[in-house]
Image 1: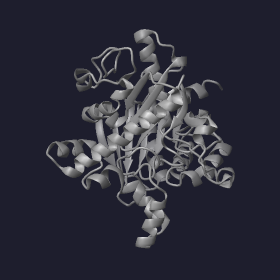
Image 2: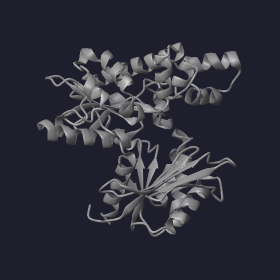
Image 3: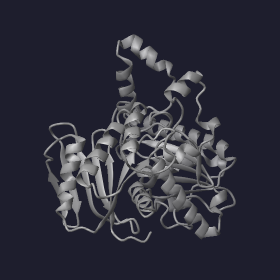
Image 4: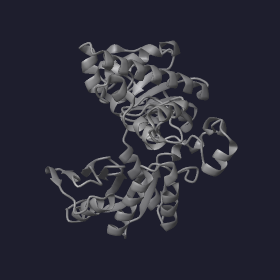
Amino acid sequence: MSSSGSVVVVNCGSSSVKLALVDPVTGQRALSCLGERIGSPDAVVHMTTAEGTRTITPAASTHRGALAHVLQRLLDLDLPPLLGVGHRVVQGGAVFHGSVRIDDRVLGQIHDLSALAPLHNPANASGIEAARAVLPDLEHVAVFDTAFHQTMPETNYRYAVPARWYEEFGVRRYGMHGTSHRFVSQRAAEILRAADGRDPRELKLVVAHLGNGCSATAVLGGRSVDTTMGLTPLEGLVMGTRSGDLDPAVVELVADRTGEPVTEIVRQLNSSSGLLALSGLSNDVRTLSAKAAEGHAGARLALDVFVHRAAKHVAALTVSLGGLDALVLTGGIGENAKNVRSMLLARLRHLGLVEDPAANDEHGRSSTPAGRITVPGSGPLAMVVPTDEELLIARDTVALVERT
């Protein structure tokens, strides 16, 4: 990585826009932006630089309008040279197995894959279109959430459904959070190699990305071989507002009893379920932990269900690995909720994961090797490794730009 400067990293969500200027070597941010309530008249953008944070109202509230507004402002600032633009794209289907430079053909394929991610890919594509219009002289790169999981064997990505669904509609497991799982598994491998000489090519890791969205992935020798999210981010672990695994017949039952269309029921499974529904209180683990300590039954139930389901999936993923060297925890909950980590390790003690309470209290930062939160021994370990998806996107962007 020879160039010096920053990469514009763009992440257009269904109702938000995130942008950062990332140094691909150091990871430092010269600027970061968060656009909220995109698509509504109340859209705002918070822009943070070394001088502080200021809030602006974009000229247009659409994804394209908000991002174009921010990028025009960016060009007026005294910032490091721009090396390229990296875009987070949620769904790459079976088409994209890695990050790619964006041209009109790639952009068309991202649009075509919107059927698999109707809330995300159209927004991702709008961000690409806006950024290409404002920064036409820079290379633009797409980094896909699903690409890391394209190494899964067919045994692990196929559903037991009619063949036509797979062949014509692409119904299979794709997985998400691939940028986080790739970054964290690579960093964990570096830490373990430096600590005790473990060969990254032989490592058996389960990476658990626990945040408002949650997923776990079995990583064998640096390659994803199984993961918990499926066709969409709805499958798998209990999440902040997503249900996770569910009997599909529930949708039919609720539709029959309420008269609501399937689209509305799926919306509720995505935005009104998970920790929020179980607790009747909040989707924020910090709030739930405080209320559970005060005796709130719903908060305690939500945390117990969350941890139980996470432990089941972690244990199941070891089947795809044929063992376990390390459980790697990341994401907002994985990195910061020591009580949840403690509860999870207690349920996984049969795998040889024994909590080191002092290390866990320090978020794994004071233990050896860095990040370890379990008692050293001959068995597997658990460790905390902070994720940095923006840095991975920046590095992928530079790697592709420098090939030209």
